[in-house]
Length: 543
Image (cartoon, rainbow, N blue to C red):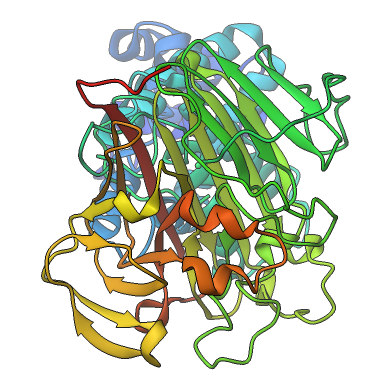
């Protein structure tokens, strides 16, 4: 070890010199190769003074590697910037982490901790306590996730991997990579681990409190990357799907079927449901107390690459033919593309599925640039007594402008007797009148074709006197509500709907379309959430 006992430089203190020597030796020689005597020799003090100040080698190790910049500064900076709504928490966290990893002081401390943990069980146990109590605990407490430690551990594993690859092994091009590029790739990972979408129940009669989290979460931080239908006859030979390269076996309560299209069935004590892999489209949601809520046409074409009429089609990255009126296919490529299932589970009895759509999943030659610059979409479905859908769009390396809508088909007793509350006094675009601007007067009622785009960011209620129920559609980060009923005349031109079925459904859609299209800068994300709840009236329909 460098240095010998003797007079220390002016201005130094024994305690400070001991800490400096210990930090260097732990980083270079590891925990087992560093001793009290070697530290004392380099610090030019008596070994008894080391134990006087620090008690033991273990306590000295923990104190000198108490990283003062982590996590407080990173977390506080990320929360402050994310609260403005412009940059998601995970992206600010990734940026501050990358900058911290490139500071000499932190690099030395972090690499020393990692080397020690890899070579000495005693050091590994100390570091485990340190990470849990000094990093993960404060991090989760600050973002309101202190009841879900797994998220923090997963984020910590990502940090450890970065320290190993960037500082210890120095695998190029990681150490020399551009900061913006690293943040664009790491941001979605930390956002998903720490804030990402899980399927909580929403408060009855109101919009969800938070974009993501477990049931009851009150955090209102937007998720980037972690979040409805009618009964369709499926094959009675549904079985658990063997895991592909990108997914794990389905949990108990979920089964896979391949007919008429690949789908996943969900059975919980509170509901049954089914979601197509094509379009990540919910085909069925039937709460135990009420039965099916969504409508699916009996004439739907269940063919690969063809849209399915009913349930909750995902319109993205454009609505109808797009803002310019020239995009094909209608309502975007998301509903006719096969999404990848990346997560499934039954947290607290809620059926949860998370799908991902990237440019690699788009096979439509008419829309090769629908997701430019590595943009990615995620769809989270959570179903129990309520249905929750989160659509998250993550921009890649290019600016991204898109429209989006959850084109929900609701089953009703008779559309002519249905009314929709919550839109009175709002302006809307009337597509049956060449896009004329009008103002809603009273509740929405249906005598013929209705095709309207409302400027509306609140809840809407479908009052159905024949089925004796009210359906509430609550949403978040959605500035458009689309109401559509084809009426008798238009339905006669629709090949995939029976002429008599126009009276059996109504669409109330949550979206951001037209003037409310969303623009994201590189690395930014946006999550739109819809929660559907249903309440029966006092009088039940006859059996």
